[in-house]
Amino acid sequence: MSLERNMEHVEEQGASVVLAGNFNPAIFNPDWLVRQEVVSSAELDEGGVNVIHAEVAQFKVGSLRFEILIDRFTVHALSEPFVRVADVIADIFAKALPHTPITAMGINYFAHFRVLSRQQQTAFGRTLAPIQPWGDWGSTLESDISEQVGGLTSLSMQQVSPPDRASGHIMVTVQPSAHIPAGQGVFFQHNDHFSIAKNESSIDFPGLCLKQLTPSLQRARSVLSHLISVARGL
Amino acid sequence: MPTAALREIVPETVRANKSSYGFVSHEVSIDRDLRVVDRAAKRFTLQRHPEFQPELFTGARKNEEILFHVEGFFKRSEITGISVNTLQEWQGCVEGIEDSRFNARIVDLTRPSTDAEFTTIPFKIVDKVDRHKIQRGALFHLIIGYTREKGGTYSRKPIIYFRKYAPESTRIGAKAASLLSSLRDASRIKTRPARD
Image (cartoon, one colour):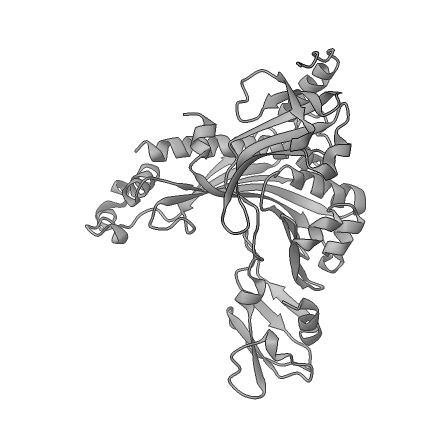
């Protein structure tokens, strides 16, 4: 089945970029982003500040949500175009604050997709994590009451050292969805991690984000589409 | 939430535990004017401050106490226009501009195996504030999917986003560079005459 048709079953999605390094949360605020031409002044109307402090800043501007700690910078795109996040990272860390020390980057995508029934959700969990290897205890996970059937709560698969980077990994996580009720949803998360290898002195992370964000989202949606096909085919 | 007022009351340090999706629990340390009574993850209790503003806090157990519910304070702002899904996404390059539309060569990112194709896009589907970005050679993304608007209604409309920065050609970004290269090559091809 095509990716387009599989994506019809997605009910919520989002993307974010996380940078690890040394940051000064106090300088980040919506007005500063406007002055740096990262966001437009019109976007200030839709958003708000939760906290801005020496050690933590959290606010929303338009469809972007920012969370800054002294060792981590995160920008979430709550709605498409997700690719905008790469431009935001470039605006801030290549143009406005080019000397910020950054040691690692994660490009994340998540989605919640709907399955036809709780039974199908359980069958999908059993496919990814069969209960037979768990022996006698595994058999106790079954129940005649559908709400009391046990099983997979979280599964992560990791690709070690993908060929397109000197250091990093790709991690895909699947869980029952907490957003889609009645046990009819699956949560999917794709984390693309890039870090500085031992033989590298530094990485142009804003440039890397510009290059890798679209391929990362393509890969995430390809894996997601396949999992939706598997789940809804059970 | 009147954050400025809160910053006045909670002067020095708010520490937040890290998690992929925001804040899970919080710990506060307060200077000598405000004493932390309860370091629970869900809420903390401060001695009443002279500038105490009752509307910021609820559930005081004693006169000298105020309760600040951390979860409520840090909860996500109301989200409007959230993406439900992305059904198709193309990356394109503007090749020619006419009165009310522009010609572009586009690549379908949701079907990577398909060839680039030419298309004509009317200005009206580009946000007015972005129309000055329609310039020959400009890179853009065209996205189709469902969005949940304020009030819970769903809409399916195309989004055009013009990139500020183009991905450069490097070894790491081979796939993106290949795509960009094909788009740049395409921009050297004479633009197809627009259909009447």
